[in-house]
Length: 194
Image (cartoon, rainbow, N blue to C red; front, top):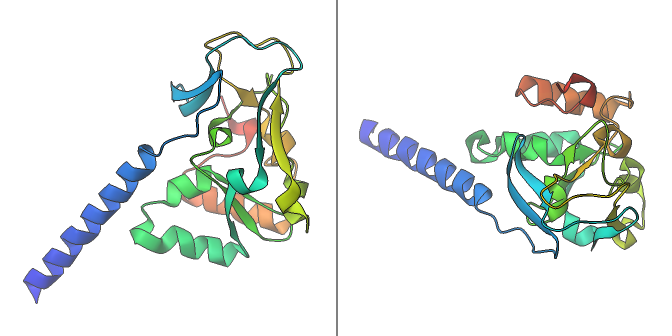
């Protein structure tokens, strides 16, 4: 019985490791002029060519950006507990709560998953959290437009509060989500970023 428990525990750790390794190695869809590389905030979207103010850097349909929708915060928490919690940090980093309580998870293959925050963004917001409760959200197109000239090598950043409302929203869904983030050491509020 002890050997079986040891074997099971070892298998769980191995599967957890493989899951994390797979997450880190996920291929990101290629987009001309953009790449994902390691940056000061982890994997980050970066320009590989210059863009002019008003240029559309990327445009993707909702179905390619938001791949998983959890109907409630409870469903989202259950997903975090799967695989021994190995994906908790990843799920928190790449998910946004809707006002209705639904939680939307971004596809790690979408370059939009790697847009970071800046108080002085260089792109428009790719979506607004009000889109998450639209009945026709499958028709939404997530686009990013240069707000100013962007140099090659520059990281692509939007203002998180303008698209997700981490600081300004006071609805129950956001408050529960931020409590979960705090519990697991993930900070999402731009006002707390250095």
